[in-house]
Image 1 (tube, rainbow, N blue to C red):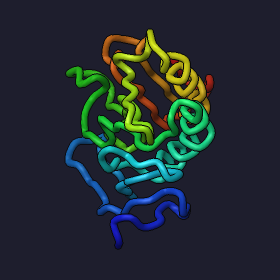
Image 2 (image 1 turned 90 degrees about the vertical axis):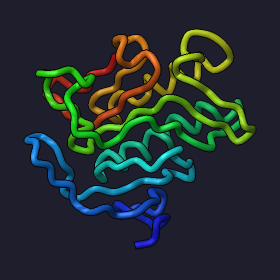
Image 3 (image 1 turned 135 degrees about the vertical axis):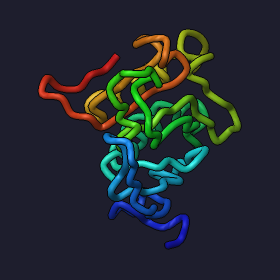
Image 4 (image 1 turned 180 degrees about the vertical axis):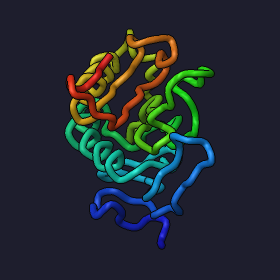
Length: 176
């Protein structure tokens, strides 16, 4: 399959279908993985290995929140992806529950590149500067699109990026 083809039944999600990932470790793997290179015409800095549910949530968030939030500031060109599929525990802590990353249900975004060349960093721009408000807006608006939304105010492990995953809870989305 072409590397920049329509995937997940959506012409605005581009990338390629990947081979199923079966791990010897229980709690890891993706039955139908995709390697996403762009969503809604916004490139990913590195292809994200995720499932289609997560790819569709990412596209919805980019379309409904990320693109509008940066529209006046220089228009969104790229998401700085720092993690997608990884067979590991939450926060890489021994004995912890398995991370949603281990199922291809999660993506971590550390920043954004705008079409004017400016870079927006979760670590450096979250608390100050002209990108503080757009960052807080895209973080807040991810809640509900994703089942779990974590950012700099959640814990030390997420001080430099947004963690989005598609886990669903009876009590509703978990957003910090």
